[in-house]
Image: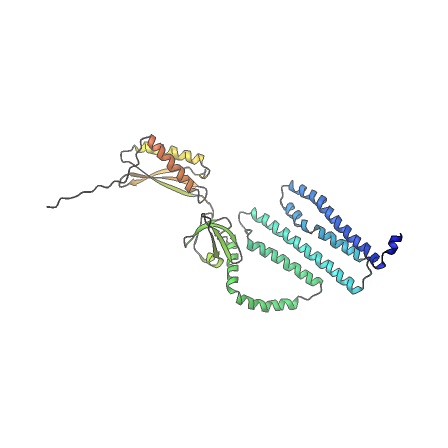
Length: 348
């Protein structure tokens, strides 16, 4: 008791509020470590992934919310003048609104990613759309904060309208690329993961669509950066639009002395084995063989496979050529070399 008398009264006035704030932070830490952790384990067992997104979106703000709550309780025990009390109340409210805005941004973006990942069509989850969603939420949160602070936003909107016209003229090329990117996404000319071939000859996988550029990864691991305007106006062959499977054609030539029925039977056996054993072949399409005509030194035929996607033709061709050469050798089916007959006339 004597020790308490030695403490100045100014410190005693602040001791209880500070204790409340420290206790609030400790309670927030305990809530995060135990109750929130249990909620995470419960959501991981559910089939819907949206509850995981919701729980993780508030994780970083839990202790801060407990701090703001304890600060609000502690402020009531302080003998503050009305002006200081008003400033403190506004600070707590603005901080809470901003914190909620951060959590809502994470939650909406996470749910947006979850929704787009399950859509065969619709809006793809790209950097552009994620940024648009995030910026929209932060703008709404900022407007709520300004309204809370009783700041009129009408003059700001007027200034932004005039300034926006000047900015749009200065950033004409940038805005053109932005709207071209929106056109690409909404029209689904290309999507993330599509394999495309441009009219200029570049081929690759679309990896991302940003504000200004689209990135394309070649199979050789080179990255192309294409302005959205050029991609929007370009003639593109999209290998993954609709049915991504495509025909794999392998030409063969056999000797004119060959038994064509035997050639047909042996080739089909090899083709069927390749079709059944390789993962790259589309199982809904059976291989086919057609004789094409009489070549200069061989009877020509074509073997048709169906690959699941672009790029599968390389392992299919590799495996079939290796097997058909081995089988033709065993069956004594000749693959002739090109033959030219030269006739030389003697001069008189």
